[in-house]
Image (cartoon, rainbow, N blue to C red; front, top):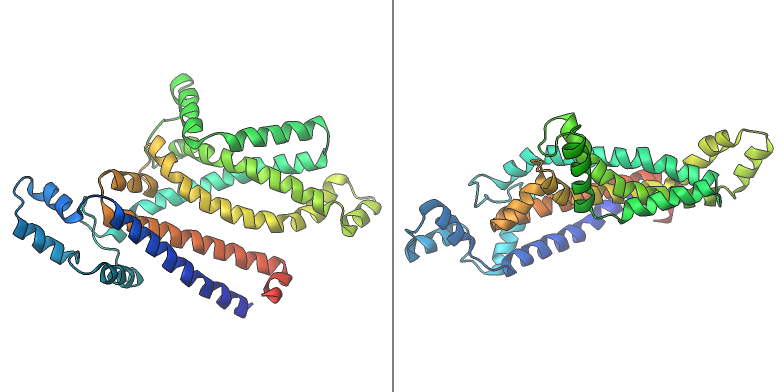
Length: 311
């Protein structure tokens, strides 16, 4: 297990280098001068070439691009992602201040996906070929096909403006979390339901399932005790990927519901061309996404020893 863990950690290094390279290159290709933007906000129209050159020197922008990239990587390794042009505070401080709200939303969305998708998939597998199976799969297709912003606006219209049950915007309370969590979770619930159904049908033909039925166990007990655990191995991998997708999906959801999270911070940073904040926040989300998938791979190898022995 130790060799497998070391191998997976080493595989993360080239991925992180590639992500940082893409983020850095995209930020440099976008039009606009960060130093000029900073001076425009701080000093209005009193911008002289000497002052602009001085600030570019302070920000390291007069260095060759390759040197700027290595400085960015070296700073990131030390936990320094630079300073925000708009807020004039360290990027790390802004990210950590908003990430709690984003993580809360992603976890709530995943719980909604599990609470809806898992029973839906199990029910469809248990009633394969019948009208219940058709209904469950139709609901899963509808749920996973709806765009995030459209579903969010629909829920706001119904539960906030028509029924007046829940707030349409804001954060910091359980009521304000419900609609964004359902917006994220319903999309993933459809994917999860289809995967659980196919996985349950696959393990349903295994010898140990036939043996359990031959012993006279109730069908529900056979599914829960013998089928669900083995069917969860591929589902666990998908849940890790879905959690990463939920983290990325908060960019749209937090904007629709005006939640003060990391996704909305990135959108605001893009609109204000706050390059250090954009590249720092995207790199941070990429690291979190990779760590989540690493944790899933470790759990996968723990459940199925063939994975780590095969590596």
